[in-house]
Length: 96
Image (cartoon, rainbow, N blue to C red; front, side, top):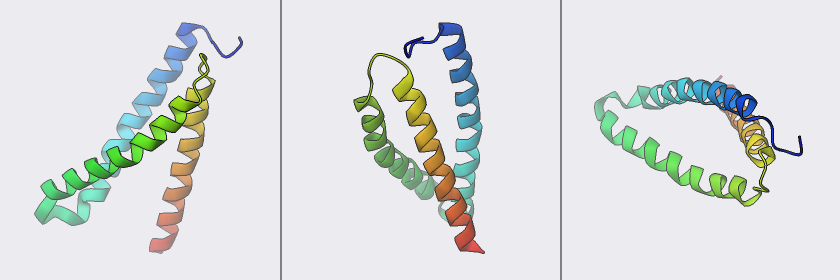
């Protein structure tokens, strides 16, 4: 397919991906704010700020490798997802 799949296949993949990401972000934000009950507004603002500051260079890096196909987007999702998984496993292991 030379890096350009049929639109129905790509959209099916995107819908499944964004559905999972939407559920995941809500839960991760709730976990991050759990110890900040007395100042949840400040915690939510800080989590949102840090998420944006971290996402900007990562989004730029994925966009830099755009070549007209979907390979860079799929690769970015795979690499950044794997990186997120490694960080989550590492932080959970630190707590024990």
